[in-house]
Length: 81
Image (cartoon, rainbow, N blue to C red; front, side, top):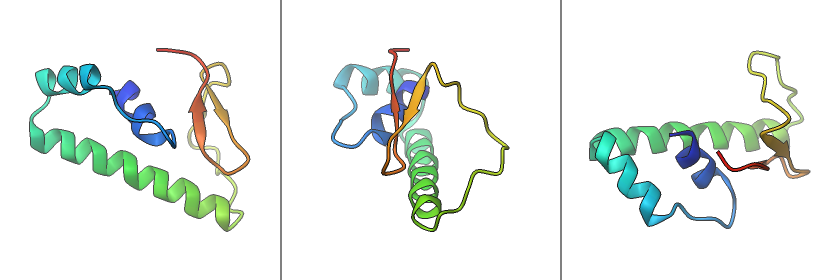
């Protein structure tokens, strides 16, 4: 699931057919739609907050060894899960 969320978050990338098949083995189509909507909404909030210079409130800490934040507010994976 986290690999899927990373895949749909990274600009210019697509989720592989293999990963999508793996999701379908564990989740219904409705569940995949819901997971996608949640990830997309969090991406929206991230871009929105960044544009308005709203700083993080410290509720969620991301390990620096796994992700790196770009100047445009996007978060990209720097290691493969």
